[in-house]
Length: 417
Ligand SMILES: [Zn+2]
Image 1 (cartoon, rainbow, N blue to C red):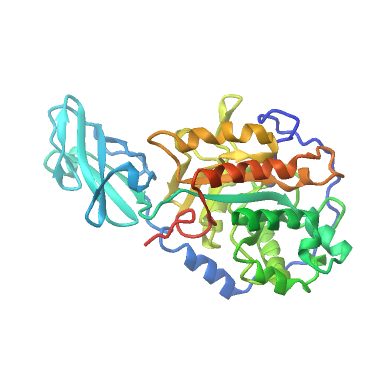
Image 2: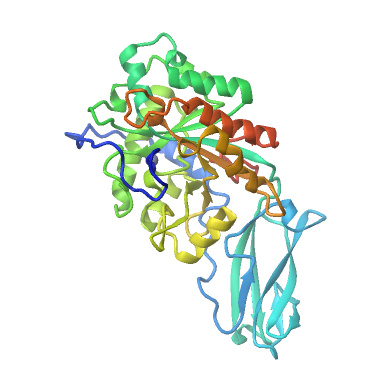
């Protein structure tokens, strides 16, 4: 996804007209072991059977939200657990039990306490003497080791690899773009996920990138990861209506190239797709490839929710307010981008980020996002203050106690167990 730098966020137009890529590059295959490794990393929270989508009967859990992710501040610490409030509605005369405990009643409201002891807890509110009176079930996630942390994702990348391939630098970091990222890593410890296209509009593809930097990629893999983003910049919204097979074919092509030229340690599953839209079958397929989380804008545009992976209105609205949500259908955590640096001047960064660190709903995981193209002077919407924009966001998170992390690991960078 990539809102134009000179246009408001709602613009879907790109400032540059581009020709379509001619011809299809040869197919590449990722080996089965790599797939299994990726899938195993996602096993802990994924593939759990979803709770019932709608309550049966008159009982309804209102809070927490199905898929909510709790940090230790969002409850009462008990021995090896977190006590949280569960509330909702049921006919006033009905007895309600929540996970076996009788709930307090006040009018048509019920209220109970549930203790989270596992990464995922099912909460069942049952009315009457048995489930025949109606019930509602939800699941929530306990991020028990949560701490303030941030992830830096760079989207729409291809030009820097073309630059390195053509200039034949001695070192990857002779490329000005990677030099900037390394300087920020040295200064702040920032970890970067760099999400790649397979092809540039002039026909350059990842297949042309040499493998002679493999050792250098691997030496820096602890802070610099490469991931899939899309086949190319155009068309816009490439996966919004695409079948899973199309998305996986593009994904595998990019993944195979990353493995070839940078090695397995540098490869990471993506934390965002181009335009942040995909069909449910494609999301399930991505989860099987090891995708653990996906970021988007989750914003309302012309009356409808957009840049939201096609999630329904209720969940999109929840994400727009709370920033995090587990989708138990796929095991993917969706999260809202805290800032898109190419849309925010350096002096505005603190203003955009400050609300996230304030109040009882203070966010622990914060996603910082930027797009590669604005770095390059040849790009029509080039931003001379690109480096300052990125650094302003990183400086703010660092000064507010957020630690660098990779969100594709654990629960958005937090250990699961
Ligand atoms: Zn994009």
